[in-house]
Image 1 (cartoon, helix red, strand yellow):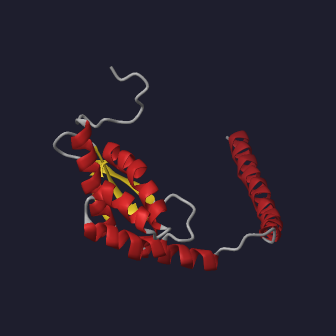
Image 2 (cartoon, one colour):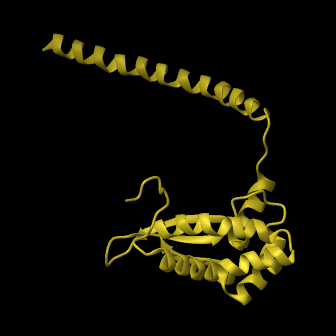
Length: 178
């Protein structure tokens, strides 16, 4: 029975699940993004975020703890070197899950899991967007100009209504003549 066990077992035994998460975490660290199912990505997020937090403090003990989870020397070196530099100022939320289309074979929800600070296209887009946008109350002045311009437009249809009435009067006169 699974009394009080709230995490997703992913249909695997405990050692198989630990090995799978370790391999997926190593792949994510080395390749910066992986494609997997949504359930595995959510469990991997719980697994890898504490490891990335430990990598911010480069000590021998933290390296040993992370190595005990990952079992991969290259991924530990990458995590404590390149990844920890990029996430040094971030207080958490090191990963992003982007949902993709369902898998053809079994209709499983697929997603793309990536490290947040390594998506160069998204970082460039946010930098451009930050430069262009401006927050403030100055946008209220534009709305008042629009309402002033809208008022003359409202007068034009009233003139059309008057024109519509004259042909109606002519048609009634024509009927009277007949």
